Length: 143
Image (cartoon, rainbow, N blue to C red):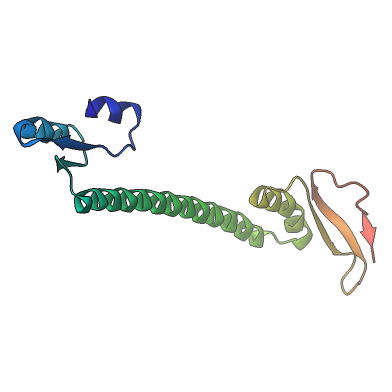
């Protein structure tokens, strides 16, 4: 039955309980994917040890999933950093600024992104130079 349980629920942890007379069946259960064998009648220590092992395996699985998620996020961050770094190759800073909104929107998951730059060199007035998505009543020019 162990292999059927594992087929239905791959992350299930199954311990075989066996009497001395059925030790061969308990060993067979472990060979088919059981986590361990507990002799009948079980002692409290054996049951506590089995529970601790299950908790440890579950903790390791959670940690693995978290590390995989962090790795995916780091890979995504690297890709975005590379896309932003490509903008440094543009000779015209305004042209590079126009390319930022889609990158930032995708990177942050925002529905919209706007970029404002100084209207002229040394100016305190800003002009919207790039946009992704729509922002209601976003000014195209502001002080």
